[in-house]
Image 1 (cartoon, rainbow, N blue to C red):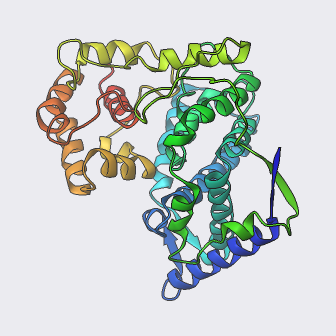
Image 2 (image 1 turned 180 degrees about the vertical axis):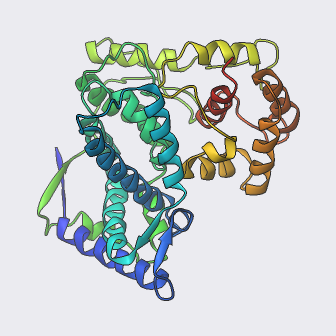
Length: 365
């Protein structure tokens, strides 16, 4: 079953939205920076999709560079240097309006697609993943997904799925059916666009349409899963081949990645070190210089917002203290004493995991 959409309306709306945003911003400025992009509109998803596209363009340029046959880009020192170079560039974003306005237009269109049709959007994302690197692609891009992220994040780092795209595509649709009532409504998400220009959902899904999207509200006569709360991980109970795969992945997701056996909500440096040492992430080790210089733009914003109560100075002070800790164990002890309880961190959350991974990379031994 399909829902007809008015792609002409979407095209015109996105174009007008981008023009209004750029008229406002570039009225007295010639360039826009990365930090300004993150704070550009009231729609955090639009802002981060712009950053995501910049990252993709960088990856395309890097791919062209690596196609040069005269140098060994697989060498670890070259990889580390390129990673550091990318981090430096991410803090030096500088875009003129001519190049920036099309990025805004595409980001708006993608955000509307995600708000209205999350299954179709995330299935499209899976199709874009390089062959054999689905999990790597999801890990790299999850920080850009601000809307309906529960539809996709449970798939990240799951055993049993392999690298075939089909199980992922089916798992996304199945998971959506489980958690759909816990997701924010499309009207609430699209309302964040209204400070620039109100979006007419009825006109978007009107009869004068030129394309269609597969309907995600599918009839389901038999209960596929038991009901859950927003905090719970969905678990499949119906005995069907693909749903059985979802069951395996989701049950594993329910296990805390690094919950201290001694005290809930306290980080265990031994367990953490054991966990990270067993991982095979590219570039896991080898951060050069101070932690503050190693953060990408998106990481800095994410850590500030989600771990340090929006206080950039507090993050800066924390990174400086961790740099002076001298060891991974001392750094974790410092974090436990100053930040975990005080700032009410969820110690098994993805953002805490990413923050701790950086510390491990600084003190791997």
